[in-house]
Structure formats: C-alpha cells, structure tokens
Length: 250
Image (cartoon, rainbow, N blue to C red; front, side, top):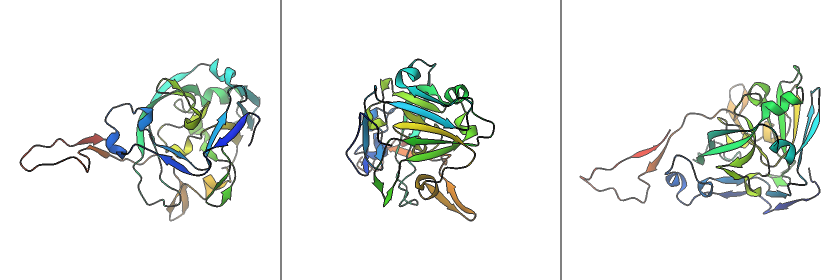
C-alpha cells in the first residue's frame, strides 16, 4: 500500500523493550521508553500532509479522511494495558511484553457511524501501510475485528500516547487501538478500513496469531488473565531472615 510521501525505514522484523523486561514496570502509567515495540516488516514514515484513511466496503457513505478531518472530530482518552501476543512463529513461548498507557483519539464507532455502516457487515478489516516480507510472506499487515468489538466505545483511531502525538515508530500519525485485546490487533500506520460480511483472508488473520483448538485455529483476540512480578527482579539480592516485599501487576 505504498503512497506518495511515504517510506519504509529499519526494514525487517524488530523488537525493542526495556533491558529489565517486566521489572521496569514500576509505575502505573508506563513511560513510552519502557513500552515494548514490535514490527514485522519495518517502520513506516509518512508526512501528515500525505496521510489519509480510506473507509469502504459495506457502507452507505464511503469516505476518505485526512489527518485534519480526524483531528477535528470528537476525541476521547482511554487508559489500557498494551500486551504483545508473542511471536506467531513460536506461539507457546510466553514473552511477557506489556505496559499500561493512555491513548487519545477518535472512537472508531464514530467514523463507522458517519460512514453509515451496513447491518450486513459482521467484520471490520483494518490494513496498515507497512509492507515487506515476514516469514516468507509478502503482503500488507491486515487484521479484522468482529463488528461488535469495532463499535465498542473504547476502540480508537489513536493520535496520541501518554499525552504526546504518536511518533512514526509508534504507528503515527494514526493507528488503531483495541483495548482489552492483544497488541497485534492494534494496527499501526493504519491506511484503510473495510466493512465486510466475512473475516479477512490474509496471513495475519489465517496463518499467524491463532491459537490451536480441537475445532481449529482461534484468533488471539481477548487477552487471557495474567500477572507479572515486578520486584524483586532476578538481580535483586534476597537475604535470609530479612523481609522482602514482593509485588507486581495483575
């Protein structure tokens, strides 16, 4: 989905996180520098004057929104944990990548309502501008949401994180944020949204990010209950006969 004014930087899969891992999560709101960052095919940079969002599919009023259009729409803040589902190439290996941040943006439901979403639509497909190769697959990064989740008030087209505009590395100028679901569903560098009556058929919905079940693959949507111990870390001394405070997050 290459566009004018857009370029890929730092091509290929990458991961960044605090050296201490979850032991760096010492505050209720995670500073952005301590929030993990994962990309599959690289980073996208696109100037705000070139960015736009196409909304199409089963709609009565398909539209194209520029950044200024979104900025002029009502916005809301939503605090939510942001958690990685782990590598789709090693789905049984826990990664413990998580943080808690404040997002600000336009509710996706508002955009879909203005686009007059059809009652025939059952899924919302979201495509990012990221392109390249991952695990021998070359296609845009595309995910889908059941329409009920897409229309819930917490799902945002986010413009800010922790009070600051989204940087290109964070998926800016605009990314999808799906609180309560794994981060893989929060598409970065969002470029198009499609209302459809079926699930998306790309690799990132059918091949990657699915948990095996007796009846077939189940998409990693809702986050499973989990907790992490922040302190003590493996490097903190624990002395005999000295009380040690153990604490973490649920």
